[in-house]
Image (cartoon, rainbow, N blue to C red; front, side, top):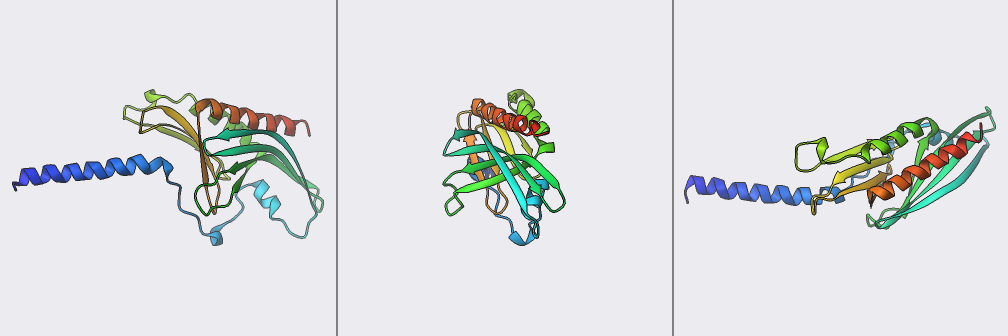
Length: 201
């Protein structure tokens, strides 16, 4: 076999393996993190982990979104510490899905009040993403909060449609795929939760 033909066959094998890996990329979640490295990443997580204090927690449900293979429930939350008379407020997004196998049925992601406006603005920005953001064949835009709630808009490798996903979790992670319209609905639910919190002031 000539050297040029060998190089040609090798190039085909590499291209095929790259295409297969790319096709699977969007279904793959990051590996679980080691619990020993966990530390509170925002105020809400720090408050929920407090000890030697009486904590008062209030929640208001603002909506539930049905996505592909699961749901995302949005709640406004307030936690008050009666010991030092301080409080933390924000949003909880509860993601429910059976996948990946062996993972908990629900993942709760906490978003501090101060993070809500930047997150809502990120929803507005990435929901407008289109093929014009890059000259390459596919694109992906994403935004992540301190508590690892992530919103993603991307061009699907198979079919070329523009779709969205949300992802969250620390020890285990879940990802819910959805349409751009559903992503906008989720943005509205989070904004509504902020309105409920503003009424507490």
